[in-house]
Length: 453
Ligand SMILES: Cc1cc2nc3c(=O)[nH]c(=O)nc-3n(C[C@H](O)[C@H](O)[C@H](O)COP(=O)(O)OP(=O)(O)OC[C@H]3O[C@@H](n4cnc5c(N)ncnc54)[C@H](O)[C@@H]3O)c2cc1C
Image (cartoon, rainbow, N blue to C red):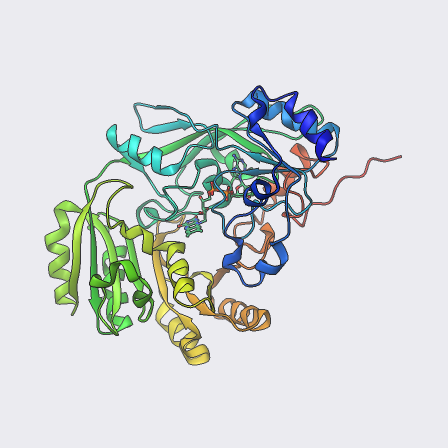
């Protein structure tokens, strides 16, 4: 089987070095950060692709999909493999389509739209964009490694979302070309609203091969931390910055104690027993922000320029889902949830969760703008894991008190919080992948169409 696959793929890829079969390499290319979830860890550890292939252009992608389709072989596409839920783990073997060599930035247009290949790393795009007076509207904390295609297909938002919303908001994703898994694969342009058919569908209904991604005008940013005696103080201060349009910000994060104690490389910025606010603010507003933090009872522990992804310390390395990583390093019994609290009832929701679960749940807030333009306390709380049942009970309880949860402990789209109620991702799968060969098992509402006898 492996030999036949290797022979077939080597015949269609110009550089035979782009066909990989070594077991250790396949194991690496078949996994992401699925191990973040104690529930997914045992389920996905042994899942591997049978072969990996690294195309260098869209013609090769088309040829691989044609070959896979004719031989009914599953294809799981991979960017940089930094996803959290085993999004790019092949459940049924087959071909791992690694797009890391398709990493060109074609151009940044005069009105600030980056035209890119999918394997382009977000850090490289941010660096180049800033040279040209632009910057990413938003990026995951995996900025340096993650690819643009993987972000669009698997991510949701991140640093910058407090100002620009998530990936699906405000026309940030202008357009892309998608390679289909039809009988005869083709390249289809999706622009405007039709991007939502493919966005965040985990490569189950098409392969993104060229992307038009809107940028923001570059700003000079300062990274800032302040510590507060209580979580309530840290939260209220950060909320006032996040929700007031007069502040130009890129990041507004709150960590309840003891989360800051997990951040060993920046322990000078941490104070024992204190909750922490972490903000990226326009340079011009740093003095005012310092004054506001002091007036709110805070002690400013750091302020320093952000100068692109190579900045040290890069404080975004402690935010979004990096926070969970630091928690797990400190104590492997920690895991996480992905939540959205109510802008108006969040204090009551915090109170209810604390009453019911005590310190089993620790608050880590990431403020973000929603599609209606309202800034809400998004959250990636750190959770002490005991059993899957307990975790599911916590998720149910969160939902019962109006806290949105995108469940990061499942490996299919439908419970991940971004599946569209209007089913357009499913309809696109039925159209573009009727045989169910793209990343099979990840869109469970899809049923292979049976041909009438
Ligand atoms: C420490 C840590 C922090 C993180 N922080 C954030 C965060 O702040 N915000 C956030 O949104 N996410 C975050 N994530 C998740 C992840 O890093 C991002 O979603 C990232 O953008 C994924 O990019 P990638 O290239 O690694 O994608 P991969 O993991 O390679 O792929 C993700 C999914 O997209 C599919 N895919 C990849 N390329 C394509 C393509 N060209 N066409 C179609 N489908 C494709 C894959 O099959 C897979 O289903 C974090 C993860 C970790 C481990």
